[in-house]
Length: 589
Image (cartoon, rainbow, N blue to C red):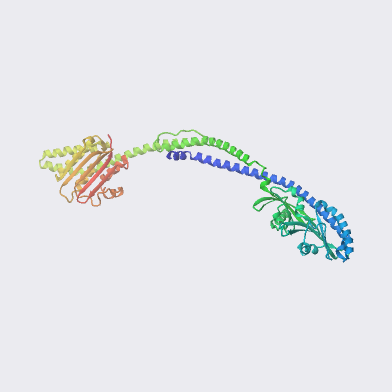
């Protein structure tokens, strides 16, 4: 998992570029495919509307021919005096029989124009006479028909031919509803302007439907409706006799925009709406074609999908190899740079790839050169700083120690103890040679112990033997190298500060190997340190409260400067029980 994360980091630019390009390719492909489908659909629908407009014109022509037959027949009826007499005069039975016979002969002649349309004629006179060419075709109850809205509309608009829908319910045995389309007109005397009856041309709705049934089918429906939005005829019988306001809205939009067609949603489906206004009928002929059905076979969407998928895969492969070719040198450069910061600091990066990558490589290698030079200078400066600190520590010993030591030698000589004076002088000479004269930063443990013993000898000659010093040294550790003068400041601190209240005591010097470290301890049983407990104090508090002398503080800083944070000085103590100084160093042969 970690390896995958590292690879993702190094190849992040390639992955981002590749994914972004793939998204763009897919988006463009889908957009172009969608636009192609939409343009094809719009083009097809435009052509389809032209074709269907011609179909609508054919239907309109057929309806106009039917209307013309109705007009001719209605004019013949109006011009017939025999028909007028039968519907207006009160005659004897014999006269009625003769008149009915003559009228029947004229009606047969008049009906000749309507025989091809299976249309029957129903006449109603002011004298109560009712006549029909086929009572079984239109078995209407005369009284109910006289009260119907069809009759009222015909009498209220005597100068106009009206097309109306009439539903005739069946008897108790046959509950089926029969739909008729009735063309009505009042019988108006042209001289007196009086209405003497009404004529009605009755055609069953299923017969009227034959005018357009050949042009309907799956997803294509025709609606014949009046200005009020009531459907008089349709291949969808459930809408006959019902008001559909949506159709009127479609008609209004097409009339206002003068577009050849509309795309509207009807009953949850997108429909291609075509309209034809029939002035003779004063009605609308609307054709709704389901868009999905119309364009279903226009394009093979499955084939188009696989074509787009193939194109996308080819483009993605090309993009993959090109992106990899461009970003691989950069990824390699990033990997080499990241490794340089970890372990291969002195290794230059490979300069390859495009211009930008090469320039970055050149710049990084130049930066490494400058950084190497800076590090070298910094190391020299640090070494000079450590030497300066060591010299400062050595100089600290001189004024702190020289005067008192020389004074002790003077009084020893005056007292006549030449042997003791000689010992002090020899120890003092050896100490000066190893501190002031020796400039090396590291000395062996054995040499550091010899210096320490000389220092202890001089102090014991000055202050007496009330403080005893014991050495517990692992013989295997005497050959290791340690920084010069790291034990002396703590022994000095114990001599001059650990026994202010106590008159005597001891100082133990311990050196041993623990794991991969060299441990040096300076332990006394003196007054202890009040601010310390047996627990290690943080570095800040340790420096603030314990390292009051420049020598003690210098030791800890020198060790950490030389070897890092894991190494250094740790001081613990307890009041009236003493102090322990623990120095941790690396093993250096």
